[in-house]
Amino acid sequence: MATERNAVDPVADNVVRQFARAAMLAALMGASVVVSIPIPLSPAPITLQVLFVFLAGLVLGPVWGPISVLLYLVTGGAGAPVFAGMNGGMGVLIGQTAGYLWSYPVVAALIGLIVHRGTALRDLRRVRLPILVGALLVGTVVIYAMGTAYMAWLLEMAAWEAITAGALPFIPGELLKVAAAVAIVRSGQITPVRS
Amino acid sequence: MLTFEPDETLAHRLDPRTKLAVQIGFAATALAHTTPRALLVLSALTAIALVAANVSLRRTLVAYRFALLILALAPLIAGVAFGPPWIDRSDAVASGLASYRVLLILLVSAAYVRSTPIRDSRAAIQRTIPGKPGQILGVGVGLVFRFLPVLRSDLRTIREAMAARLGTERGAVDRAGTVAVLGLTRAFNRADRLSLALQARCFAWNPTLPPLSFSRADYPVLAFAVVLALSTFY
Image (spheres, one colour):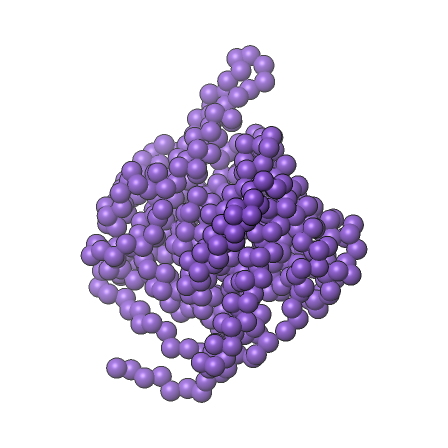
């Protein structure tokens, strides 16, 4: 049996802690596909994935937030049942909903950057409400822009056709998720962890 | 639900890197070609992949039913035209062919999922992607997969507790917020214990990986994957 002889290169303590949180948040994102909350006046129930993408940017910041979302995507690509409908596999990362999925790391980074104004994490209770709401709305717009654009290209649909099928039915749910994320931050129940 | 199932098929014996290469090659060429003739060839290849991994077509289609709904609706929506004759056949056919190739890509990835345990994918990621990004992704995938059932049961506990206290009568924002805050709190408590455990076990950037090796069957399949990828440009 071959043996490897080289010095151990231990991971720094603060990196281990942030990495463990990123991995747990990714697992939580994957676990949340089983939770769906019906809402009135909309055919599509709320799922919590996007809420956790928001929270990844808010709590883990613009560096570890996207890493967390990326871990979620790669685990799904490797075959774990973490995507909508308890599916996994690389096909989902290329298929018609791939635009939404690949927008998540971008959105986590974007929200983290807007809210924390850089890579050093700030206390979320000090973030002004318009900035918080604005960041979350920008994130939502990016998710649907990337999602519908990719869907339109992949399935050879016109832009308005993709928007009708891939964005309009979900808008009420998205606004509720933004409201939920704002309520969570305002309640002060979560704080970004710096180390 | 699609997951890994232990078996003795050809696909199960292949190295995960070979299978990843085949998937990438297949997806690349499927995204570049939507002519009926190309789709016929791709369908045959898909059939071979499904047989090689002993995938049940019916069960896979059931697992992908939500995705199939959108794929089936796309040509209908694309075919609608404002004004007589109200239906544009060429648009609908173009969208239908495009949707069909997505179905083929999903089926080929189902063959990968059934024939590859997560720990093999993890080893493939960690060996293929160099340096610290590869380590973060590889170890991360292992941890996410390990903690998935744990956090799923956390969420179930939270929801049962909410239901017992009539939480289901509350508004959607309130419910989503409660599940998210409690889920996150529990997950981060687990993360703190996990990071302590990782440090105690000397978590390093250069860990020992599970062994992977190419067998004789891998080389022709790998060569085929390269051919598939190159066919994107023709």
